Image 1 (cartoon, rainbow, N blue to C red):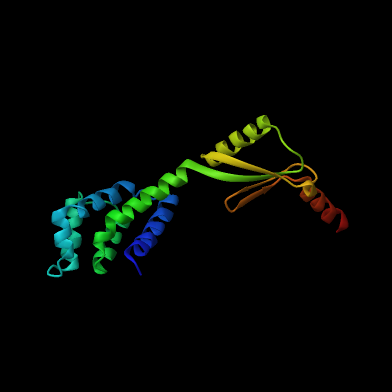
Image 2: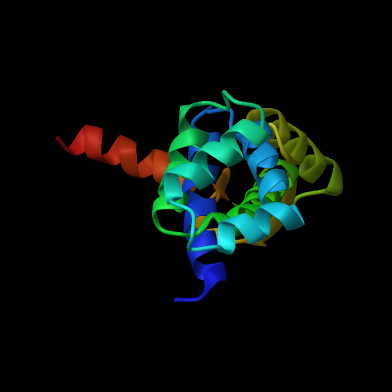
Amino acid sequence: MSTSQISRRYAVALFELIGEGVKLDKGLAKVAAVTSLDEMCELLASPEYPSSLKQDVILAAAGGKLGGEIERLVAELADRNKLTLLPEISAMVEEMVRLAESEVDAEVTVAVAITAAVKTKISKALAASTGKKVRINVSEDKAILGGMIIQIGDRKIDYSLRTKLAGLHRVLAA
């Protein structure tokens, strides 16, 4: 497995923690900056020093208490002799956060064409709901009869007349 694949696995895990509200960005940036120093690279590459010493040196140089998650990450990477990956992992996490905060695509399905003004209103409402800038792609499907279906990532919001009629049919048929 290449180092970038290994780094990506760690970066994805850290990104998921950030998504859950864990504050990692400053601590991760500190340890990444420390491990990217030339002197530190020599220490990390040397098999002469035990992983516990490398871990302690990085944490001390980065400013001591960085949070449990960062300390566990450094310990894990030290045990696996992968501390040199920290700058790459940090860069990947920063990129993931930047992309996650910027824009999201929304697929909007309507029964009939909508005007630019309606499209703008939908975009603003979705931006307020998601907290991100929303880029809308509109498609037409006469089968939904009316209303709209909005797909944002894995989230689907169905305001179509067809779905409402189907629900009413189920209630009346029971």
